[in-house]
Image (tube, helix red, strand yellow):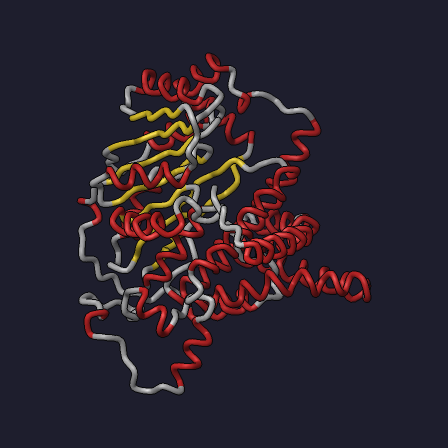
Length: 456
């Protein structure tokens, strides 16, 4: 999710601030499809998710939108994931299609397989460790998905799923209580002090960071550009035809190597085609976060995936230079066949031919994010070695601004708590710059050696 370096001293934050100052998203709805009539399928990729998949399925069961099919793909699990799904189906009486593979093939091929077989208007991909907190999550993202013809994906907001919250969900549902008893699920057990501390550190860090990213950074980008760079992969709705286009483009060229995080690749493909990734405020999903000891690897995968997509879709980060070049070539317009029949507030023609020739405004985010990933760690490392006082002052000033930003965008009643979390998360946010530096160095090595084994 955090493919942008989460520091306040950054061009991407300035762009978000510009968007926030412009006010509400002024895109006029121009639907060419009645969203209430859309057929929706849900796919849940799962691998060794026996502890949480029942909570995920229970939240899908409670959605107020009529879901046609729920498909769970057990991708070579070595635990009791399939058994939990079958037992949940028996207890709840809800039909769930379960696909069990003896050998794992990965999340990307699993989603691609369902996408190509489905005739649904939209596919909602939900991670097995994710709970849809609001009953109208699916209906809201589907409404946004078909609000304008150019929207290709839509997602809500994500927050960390705490253990206490997980236990409460189990207690409130008779079927979950029965499953927890039969399978002795870990979510209902008390943790050791050390484990609680390690998970609590991640919870604090992610609670504050997600609030900053979604309420300030991504919201500002959507208001400025009409889109964010990519959706949140743990619970996102895709137009089936657009998602199929992505897989049809990628498979013959790169196989399953769609970067270390498929949602970042898919989101950039949509932006490259001139389509949009929408964010819906006010509906939430909750995702279980790893202990802080596992956090560096997750951050590395996200950061690396962002860099890998820049290689595949170079026209996006080069958009700024294409626009400058365009200034010196007046009168050149895209071919008539590239123009859209339905006009929106964001009127640039669709198609990669236009992107290759002129770039996309959203590509400016990629340009800025690339600079941040390369420059920020190096600058801070330089200051730490040659001017420790300046490094401390820089970190302190950044921390205060980040804390103030979270205080401003948090809901009334949560502002002091959220701001305190953001301040407490400063050490982890600074250390994440080291992860960015490692991912940049590894990416450079991959480019030099020709390694393109970028697969989730």
